[in-house]
Length: 147
Length: 147
DNA sequence: TATTGTTATACTCTATAACTATA
DNA sequence: TATAGTTATAGAGTATAACAATA
Image (cartoon, rainbow over all chains, first blue to last red; front, side, top):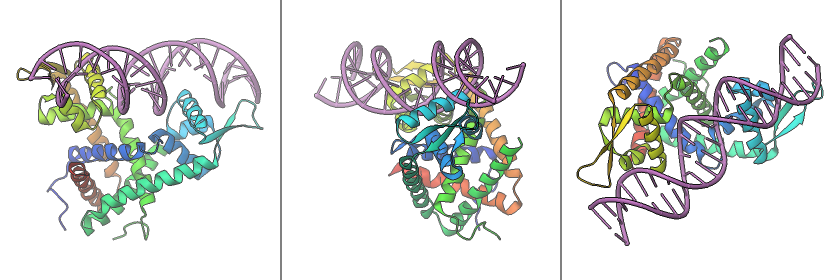
């Protein structure tokens, strides 16, 4: 099987990644849900209501940033703030039904766009993509747990 | 060879891509060169001086956006504006020596970070990554030429 | 005193609309 | 009139510093 050029350097790979970033960002913007909002909403969908600080840390952004993001998302009806009964200082952020539905649709759209992209590749490369992407995600996750 | 889960769905893949996007963006921000600046500077490095409009179209952003990006980059000493002798309306954007050097260093850093990530994978998955990324970049490029 | 969240401030990145200058 | 570029305006996304409220 032809794995492309004889040596695929880190430089070549990072160029490829840059293109993917641009592609995803573009298809992510349509529908009015930014990368940041989509990512936070995704976490809330998967993991349920969370403390604002928790969410900021998990998403790797500052607390003020998350405060503002949540405010924008609240204004858009995607999430709501709920008082934390066990801690008067705390705020729980929770996805609304609208938020959950919007996120499901958006992700489905992007997944479809990616699938269409992959479908244009010959079989062996398709398999490579389905192996490579989850593998990279795995090490990134690991890297994140202990950097 | 184990290609991961029995069926790797578009949903799983897009989650992986989202993580990569976040990872790259983070390592891209350090050193004070944004994704947008890095991408534009990269194009100027590869292709030489270009019309502002040309650059905006190639980078897939609006003309005013590119005007501002170029202004910021000019202020940072990364590029310069040069009058286009053949058309009084036109402006050529050109990377400075500083710009070229900064870009080379930044890309090298990111490439290294990616390589470190890949190095943590078992051999077969490493090969998959070196096949998959350029393949995806290829179809994105093709998709861009005629959407 | 330490933690949680918000406000204040500032910068980048992005778009559309309106404008100026040259073809 | 059409094209190249800038200015005006606005909003998202990001950060650090300062602050208020609660533990």
